[in-house]
Image 1 (cartoon, rainbow, N blue to C red):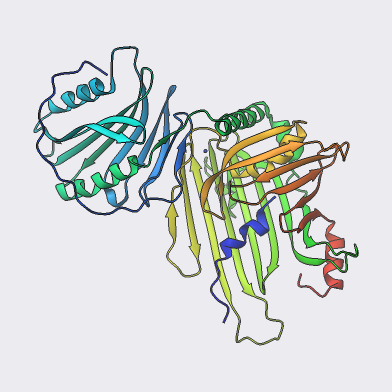
Image 2: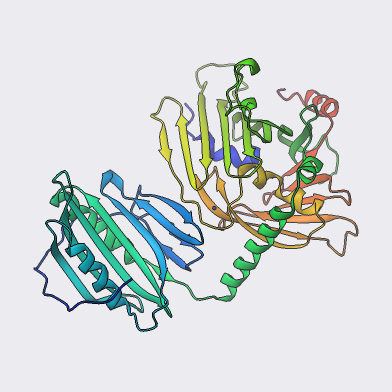
Length: 474
């Protein structure tokens, strides 16, 4: 029996190409937090506008909210243990310190019904940053307890970094939430504008400038059109140069067009709703790949609204054993699917593998630099279409890691190949680079993976003939 292997790990093979005035201090009662341990996510989230990175509690969900020119990040703690709002607060009062700001907020809360100061700390330190923290319990209109925790750091001149925690619940829940809150804040890192930070900021600016200048005609120039398609062959070239000696790994069909959201489903057009009739861009990738005795068939369908504020996609895969002996003893089949939906800063991903219970996550989307799935597949073509060279940085969802990751696309015209363009892409900081070659007209010539395999456009008739001559499954 083949060992259980997640077909989601093969996705990249088939598909690769986001205050007031202080009051006198008062003594606080002694309060001892729960000793419950907490597990943090391995990868920190980045709030680039603040220069902050922080590790969230495992299974916490984060979302960025913009109100005017102000950006806040909301975090929902696991097990309904409350929320944390992270924001940068500016003041015009040059004499206002973090301590005075903390005292002012505390005193406002102490004026509420049933208010009780649970704890207060003015010697808080995280790394080189000094802060102030307090906890207040008040009573809601329904009689339940509301716990509030505020932690303030002096971030920059006339600027404070605030972590505002709220929970409506029991004392036991508060004790658990407090540990999560404090442990997460202890991982914060406020970065200076290092050369890497400046490079990344410049990369985001390049990507933003590119996307801002794109028109409907620019997208149309790089799309195949609904009635057209591009076939590509995945193979490892032979040293002899003879294509019959090359190793075939798979093939895919790519279609991209402007259309309606309703085209994501098989629903009859006469039954489309207003939502189905939203205009946007669609991308479909049908692929078959063979690897390590397995065959992977997949279909990926992506939609992006014209204003880029909304996207939806589904990736369906079937993983099968490739037993050439004719025996059914080692037959193995597993179906999997990833469904993604985003509106604004809220992204939800649902994964189903075989008969397992579906899992749902909401990856954090950074406030700047996020691109849609459609754009992540088209960005190389769009860069070359606009005849741009340079480093382009962005954030996009990576289906292999199930997270939103920083990606780079570096465009250049090699001196050794006049008239040609190369775009070197990394879908995540730890992922290997791929190199895409375009001709002078922006047409795709090949994609070179780090393992030496190539994706190359090929006519369907030639692909069928080649695989038939090699006795491979169609």
